[in-house]
Image 1 (tube, rainbow, N blue to C red):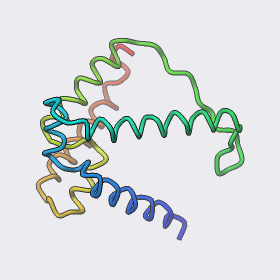
Image 2 (cartoon, one colour):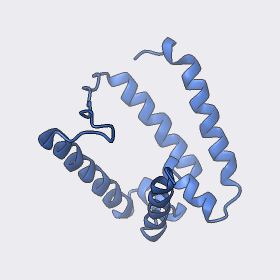
Image 3 (cartoon, rainbow, N blue to C red):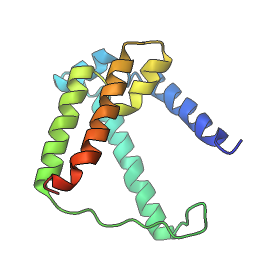
Image 4 (cartoon, helix red, strand yellow):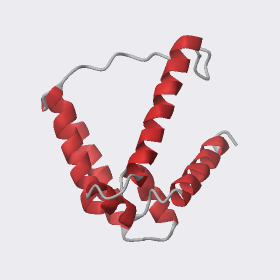
Length: 137
């Protein structure tokens, strides 16, 4: 029962991703070829919701579910981390036709071959965890 809210949110997320066509390889292809605003509009909407959400958390001093203030540490400024991380993320997105969120939606739609991409992402995350202390942060 405790995790039911996360299951419901995941189902709603999957429905929104499907209905907005954010899981469509064609839409992602259009975006990377600068032929359509569709995906940029979805991304812009998400960024705006995030900005408003963070602003509300700060302004209203909203607490987490344990009653403690939500701590939002400042980001470290570093060109290399965002440049190289963005290039790797974008290259993976362009090669697979999906970013991490829609991978599980695609899996739910029955695209079994996406398991290869999910496993690759998990392996990449493990490798990063092992070498992150040696990277230029």
